[in-house]
Amino acid sequence: MFDFLEDYDLLGAFWTTVQLAALSAVGSLIWGTMLAAMRVGPVPLMRGFGTAYVNIVRNIPLTVIILFTSLGLNQTLGVSLGADDVETINFRLAVLGLIFYTSSFVCEALRSGINTVPVGQAEAARAIGLSFRQVLGLVVLPQAFRSAVVPLANVLIALIKNTTVAAAIGVAEAAVLMKEMIENEAQLLLIAAIIAFGFVVLTLPTGLILGWVGKKVAVKR
Image 1: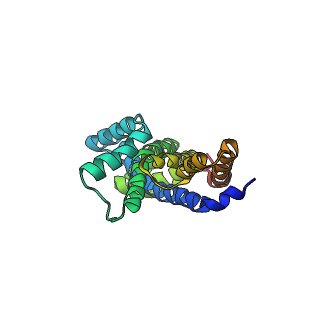
Image 2: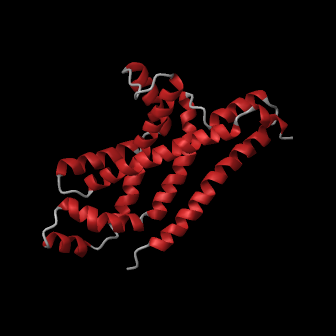
Image 3: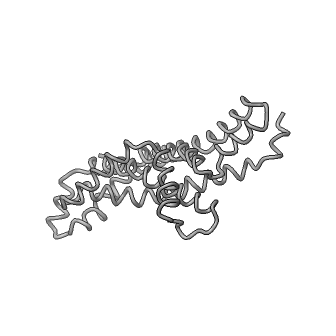
């Protein structure tokens, strides 16, 4: 029943999916944290930028963003992100698009965590002479991250599933392999079940582990 799998690099396709998700998760966490800092910061221009970015990007379909990175950045503007071959360029553009999109959700998850930190703690930190950057980095964000573990886990799970959109620009991840297998084999249900199981293997342990971590590190009020 599963003999046809020998003709396809199933593990390689899912490894590409894992790489997409991991790199995008790191980039999204960094950029999303910066956006969250902007949204709660004292500078009106930065607050406006953060708010506009989140509200606009969250309402753009991810497929449009991924296609823009390929058609707009690469083919129109010639952006290659330091790569020479098409496969690497498309992979890096897909990571960039996923970061651009996912960071808006990371920002909101972190902002929800920031809102759980008592205002009195920030005021006390400012009263002893700490700057906004110090208050955010030493007092607010450490507690916000602990409160936002579960929301961030949900964002990560959604990101893993969203990597399938990279197929739109030819990144050889699991969705591309599934399309190829369906075109060549007459076992639609079995192929769909195998790919679905692969994503369950990636997302279910992630959700369980991060849910457990969230309970362990939660700030007791």
